[in-house]
Image (cartoon, rainbow, N blue to C red):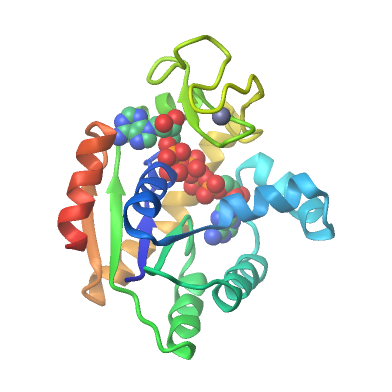
Length: 214
Ligand code: AP5
Ligand code: ZN
């Protein structure tokens, strides 16, 4: 099964993708994670995209399509792919359809996660993750049991994303409404769209997604 998690920044795409990976043997393909890894390792491409990402703008289609193409070729698909944060433009959506078609695959569902702006801003402004194991935390919504210490691995290396500030967040939301929200109509017309209320507790949202996938 191949699915897209579509939604604005902070809708919970990454959170739900990680739960699906644990439960269903699916492979998460997050273009945001791939780009951040390129940025951290200082590759030519990473240097090129760093400023664009930190400002909250979209990276060019050719770069992200190239990353996804590489992953689709090089990854054993197991229970299928979860596309997290990709596609984000109509050109990327067309490219994904072609790439999947070439390997004899298709999309099974596009889960549109709906969350209103004020909640997105609240979720993102307090967010940080464990730099060692990737567990996500939040100043108000999900603090670790001991301040500054990861519940899962005990690391004290907590990191905040460079684009999780007020200015970049405004730009990210604008980019979502301008470039990505047209995909809602695109996938609706194909009969692939399945909207989910992203406002409930993490477990409730996960349950709603499971109902769609089963
Ligand atoms: P990317 O990494 O994809 O970021 P994003 O879309 O802005 O999404 P986020 O990761 O911020 O949010 P999320 O929906 O995953 O929410 P999360 O689960 O973390 O992209 C970053 C940048 O890379 C882009 O701006 C762009 O520059 C570039 N880029 C990436 N892909 C690209 C592409 N295809 N084309 C061009 N450029 C691209 O949850 C957020 C917080 O809320 C967490 O603290 C979490 O614990 C909490 N939370 C989650 N669910 C709930 C819930 N139900 N209730 C309460 N809290 C919750
Ligand atoms: Zn950890």
